[in-house]
Image 1 (tube, one colour):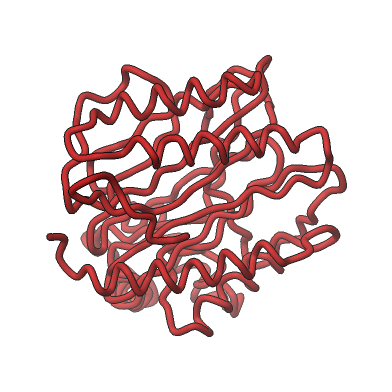
Image 2 (cartoon, one colour):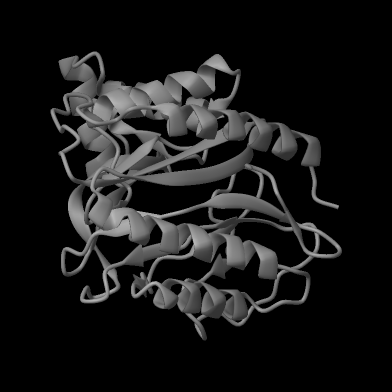
Length: 297
């Protein structure tokens, strides 16, 4: 039996409400920061904590883009947009995403990711190899004429740990572990165009960070900021936007010191290597005796 299951279930139920809210949003003409803050405010309004900053991945951006505090990015016409978000209750995390196509040419790419997700969920069971589910994702995406992103994976979730060691690949043969009853996973197929490379690379800078340590911090402003970050976010990812919103010189210099000292480390934006368009679909599931249960649906 998973520890704190009632809080994981509450987190998932809350996130399902946010999913419905996001599906009803009309993002055409919105700014990225408007989407981020709308989703984050919705989570807080329901009484949840932010498991990580809302991600808005436009076109070839697959993951790890959240708006900086002064972001001017607008959602382009005829684009494909991933919105990835999570809820935290007492450290119990659930994670989900949806993809919005603003051009009919990308509709089938979205469908491929969604079908791959549903087929993967149907295949999860105790004792099933993680790589087998990866193969199911790969074949489902290929049936629609697209490629999976081979170096992005789903991930096991534990309390206060968004990535808890075991990974669920999007291709076959890349993971030797097995699902076990009582484990919680985020299953998240990523699909890209057939002619694309089918992999992601880092594109600095980073706008999402996590706390690592206070050792080596020298200035008082950096010490105070480090203590605030550690107390407020613990081990969970946070947005530089949340820290730098007041644009105070002391805050900016303190944060720069923490980054340079690697007291906080960043997650660079991940983009498809060849510039291919990317779709993502994601749910958080609980592995049960006979299969699994979707917590975020």
